[in-house]
Image (tube, rainbow over all chains, first blue to last red):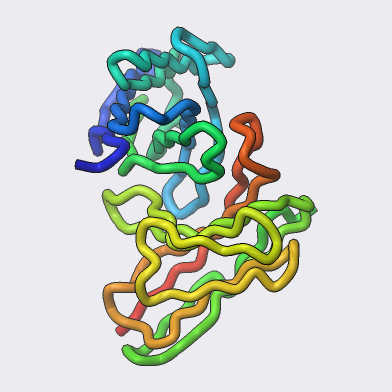
Length: 111
Length: 114
């Protein structure tokens, strides 16, 4: 079992709809969680980070963390074709200084 | 401000050849990382350097060596390339272990081993 698991997709979403991405992790020592977006042929870029249980909103993105159930999710509201990319979930232990990545979920937003 | 710079961008090797992937960052970051990315596998950590003068193995270190030349530069060496090392390699850097510190990635090196 991988430490960080994601559905590989593709997740097909109509333009304007909400895309919902899920991520589960197995290491209960994980304290910090990150969502990276990666366009095809490009490098990953950070879009959200979350450290406490609950929701964190940033523009059209909302990250949700539930440490008891060991899952992290990312919601993309009003999805745009430019949101079509692979989204990578990553976790980090407290003071660990290294991230563990999931395999990524490919999202396709159709006009 | 270039951020994290990797060279080369593309490389084709024959089995058994050696090569060094170069990485440099101009953000005065303490920590640097080398990842490989294969289809469906996400990013897997090869080696990392928490600070100048230190290096540690990651998830998939076999077949690789690294050198933290100075605070700016962190190189990855393949001594005897194998087809299983065909992958996209990313270098990254980060200020330090605090969670709020963002990890920045280079543009990647696409390596094919024939």
